[in-house]
Length: 168
Length: 168
Image 1 (cartoon, rainbow over the protein chains, first blue to last red):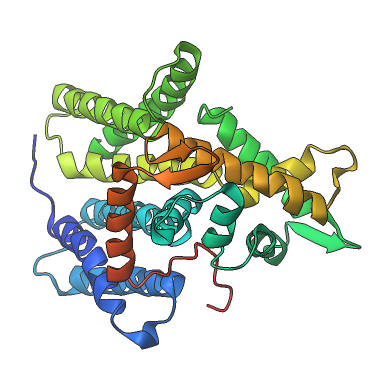
Image 2: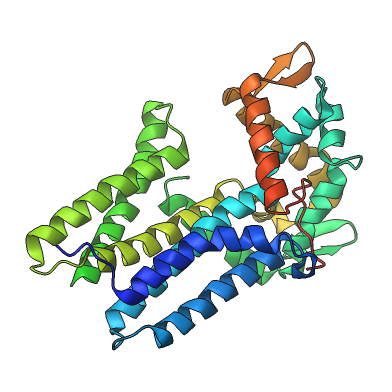
């Protein structure tokens, strides 16, 4: 068994480790925008650096080495995206941080207000609905919500994924 | 050939992971969904490496690990997307209603508060929050976790609202 990665794979492993460090650096540059945009920028940067590494590294590139490196890089991007999205958009985590930030025990209603930083659950609902409406999955008319054909297809896919991953 | 071994290990993971989730629910195991995914990944990765050593004369560990990591992380990504998504819960509830329509007010006044209470139960069950009379207070474990989350959010320049920013 050969445990040594190829040159391109080694570059991909290095860039995978560098991705969170890059995100930390981008967080200090205001021009890089919000969380989502910064993450996309981080991914584009490491992909560009990987392409440069594949061209610049000495010796002839092997197809399996480059492909393996791409898989490793994509794995790292998905892994960090899962952690990053939990930090940025995690509902349960933010509930906890809002309660701790309040500094005293809260009733359910007070907790909802603290979570929404003065807003209410309606603001939260509209924010989540904006995602569904913006993606063309749901339409609103006369104060009622209805799924589009795309929404129905996505819902079926979600049910299939839930079933096949054992979530039921 | 090493890529094939890695892919076979990933297929085994895709079969073992849902089986573990179903068994955990049926037998009332206290292990969380993410812990079960980690167990399945470690087991199948070990099996893949053993298979590679046995059947491939020049087994390239990183070729196998790259495709295994990519497929497993893709699975975890899909799992995470459908596991506890508020937006998808709203979409699925629309699909399951007669006529596939719902008043917006019902989502705001009933479904989202139910989701809110469900997440609070998760925090209480996880020992991060405790009910005190009619109030809720963070436990010391909850305060520690919230502190760490706050540090990470500040380091990565992430806000603490958990709302999607559509201006990006």
